[in-house]
Length: 98
Image (cartoon, rainbow, N blue to C red; front, side, top):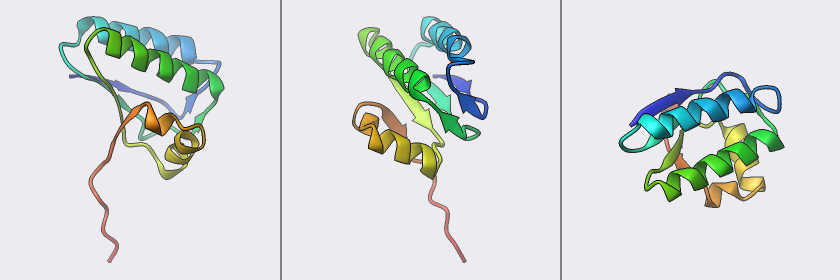
């Protein structure tokens, strides 16, 4: 497994940098490539398109792209765009309220 951690924004300004990091991860990883999206607050169409392309690249290479720690807002964006049916989202541990 290889881990790539995203900053607060995944948009047209930094999508090329993230794409490069993911491509390097796919080349060096033996198994899954996990994207930690815990800090991600904003994603635009360029970011969604890049994640979709990365998912397809992973599948072609016999790997999986796994999105970890998606906030409720990011999961909502993925649901509205129906990418939650394509991309693999890892559910984090359940947080209990007391």
